[in-house]
Length: 114
Ligand SMILES: [Zn+2]
Image 1: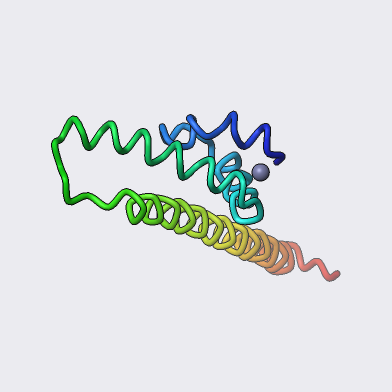
Image 2: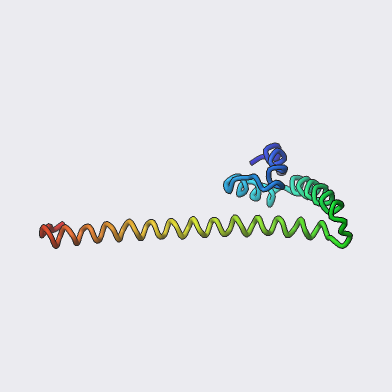
């Protein structure tokens, strides 16, 4: 992802509208680009600041809220990657189990030898 795409996706990120793949690319760029990090933080603070004004909360730390939001996104993507890895492992085990059972079934029923 480049800076132009990142900045186009900022609103979608803040509205929680990015797909998992887009979010992953967004976070990768965020880690490597200080300018876009600043841009996102400014957008986050403006939007959250407006929300806080509506709620009339004066003790709210916007910078900490921003960091918590990024950390939550990072945790979400890490969790999704773990799930995908587990799914790959389960699918692989299932494939080999079915193949092994099939082989022994054919061997037992028809006496085939490979
Ligand atoms: Zn950038």
